[in-house]
Image 1: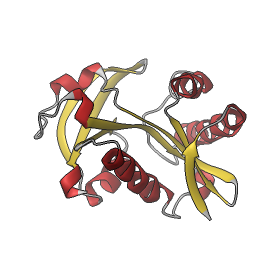
Image 2 (image 1 turned 45 degrees about the vertical axis):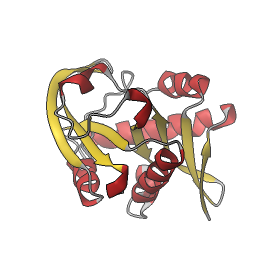
Image 3 (image 1 turned 180 degrees about the vertical axis):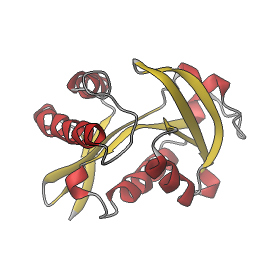
Image 4 (image 1 turned 60 degrees about the vertical axis):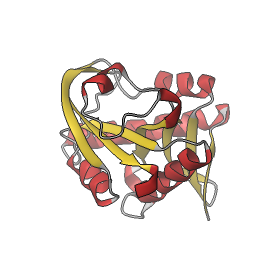
Length: 177
């Protein structure tokens, strides 16, 4: 049975393992996320989110299969996107760093996590849903578009310590969710 909950300290090893598996696949050329081992995401990424209380995990039969950060923090690069909905910061919910275990891909976990995020945003009174990904991450871009998210700009930047990123910003209005 699939569940999504706030992460706990004892989840950090498993989250780090998921990050490592994604980095392994990136380095082998099996997948393209644009993430770089020891830069982003790292265990420290997860620890900082845990400290902010905005790290979530998805479990299936008590096995952690995915993790992401859900909060209202819009990264600085978002100011360069051409948002359709000019919402106040308090009306925006952001999904960061969705990581699904590569050993579990193809089971709909990413789609289910995004559905949870959308519901969480609605329950929090947030009308604007935002997220981003590296332009190189064609799998995530395709998924987000299939789920009704619109690309609102590509920002060239150094992102989370990774140079030469083309950050694709996505938006969906809660009424469209």
